[in-house]
Image (cartoon, rainbow, N blue to C red; front, side):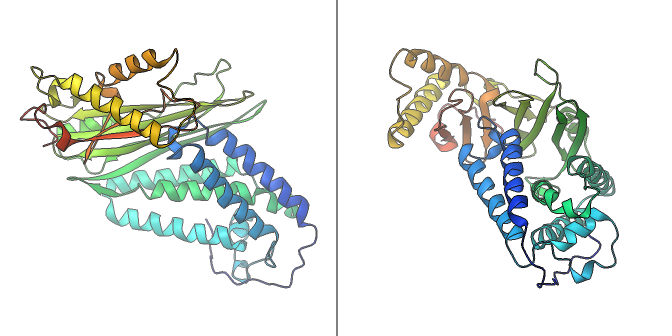
Length: 381
């Protein structure tokens, strides 16, 4: 990270010769985002629309860098740093701003976390810096330094997003996160892994200690035939109280030398008492009531309405696949791995069913609409 992040530039540097570097940077951005933010990757918070918005932001950023009067200019406050990457970060306004935000989030999280949580965050930061050196290596020739600016922008932007989850209060707990990074060179480039795990900071009960153990996923085995795939694992925490924590895991993988990647979503809801264990339908619903039929009917109706309102063509509920789709939805309402519990209700994710479609419906059934079938002791009440 930059030793000095002040933004004083020599604006007299000419911008001739930046066109080729600009086009190379845009190509670099396009290639990287094709491999990291995949169409089926649920981490994108909205699929292709999020991909396009992020890509647009980065292209604008590159235009700003390469076609502004400050392109390649050296920040006068950078004279006291000799490390090449720090010099690049310090010299570019966008990177300098990201660096400032990154440091602010990092310091703020350290103040909130316990001693052990702070130690883990410092370890993460050191690992990220080592990962950054491999992912965005600084060219030996100083004239080539601008080529890695897009890579650094992506890396710093991603780390800023990560640190926004570094110390977050939810329910009765302070959650931190543990990130595992690796970049391993092979004959086709680099195999990138970034695995993020949630963690309760300063667990004080056997239940919270066990929950942290169950949430630890430091390794992921590649599903690619070659064994070489870029793997990204992230998560969202949902409904959280003293009795239950719901987590939505998002895993994506890109197999090298293939046209596209693939992604999966899976809910991981654990009841904490008496010891952490997976949620069962009987933990939420009255088994002697038609709870499954209620869920199935409501889910099907909400999806069909969403399809009509968004003028989806072709309609997935017509033709030969309609009955199979209905059967799949019925199976989802029986399996808690498809139930991401939130404060306002049960969220059903449709990414797996509507994979490769431009429109993926989002359905949340409010708890208030499930009165009469919820068990009296349900941990959501």
